[in-house]
Length: 395
Image (tube, rainbow, N blue to C red):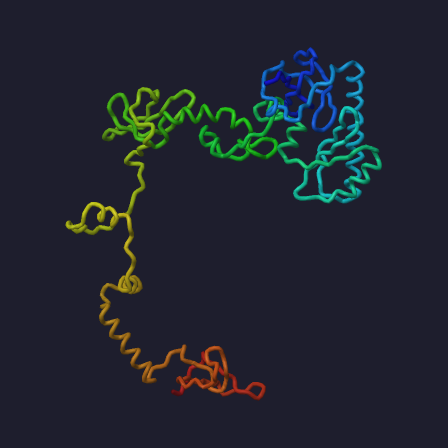
């Protein structure tokens, strides 16, 4: 365990814990310290704390000295040169025709490294750009690709709440945020209302998630069946989670009432969410009497399953005429099949290709099934025209 000091670098940087190095520091003091990017100037945010150095400061970075007036002036000059470097890099990107959006340029305090942060949809080959920038600035160049949340964190802005963005002020990192958190807090699932300036779900949804989860465990849900202090059974219409107020709909005969109760006044089991009876899905049950010999499980299964249509039901659906006898129709159908097999009755689908013509239906050209030729008596290009639609009027 060692005494480590929390130092904040840049406006959107993380708080890094560094060794105090026998330097007397106070809150908001500006110091020059070592980081993984090089020597930078930061601001002290926490007093020395006993922490595990292997986890908090594995690289053994430490504070070098307190910042003097010359150091502060040099930092201001670096920021002015960063603006010029941004403009130059912006022009170079346009010259090379690269699909990338430049976000920010940062110098280290000793100006040994210049870092450019950019956005891009995929991988970008910027090797030629790096060589061009190195020749212009005569220092080490680093291009780092970031995401949209990091861009918003660097640029900053005002959220829909009217305050400065959380990520640009006090958040050290981005916690995973899911749509389930918005559902737990009964928020509107409209993307424009629960998304931040970056287009992702707002980070503040994570702030109160634990409190809402704890309250939802002991509160009823919408549609649950509860018992009021009057002994009536009702259905939960809405729940105010923070106030623990529940609006209950009760129905007694012809009278209906919606009343608000405190959650402690209602009787319900928070672990078992029992739905109200009239809120269940209405299942269509056929008007047939169930056999008495079936047990309860078979009866319930019969109610839920829909019987499949038989061939006879399909035929009955096609012939709506109630006076028409189904047996008569079947006899006529058999008689038509006999006439078709004997060749006494033809159908328009019986027009087959010629025997010597090979087709998909007659690959060998030896189809001996009956076919019917109909010609209109006219010739076209030395060939007889084949017309199936004309009927033989002389027949």
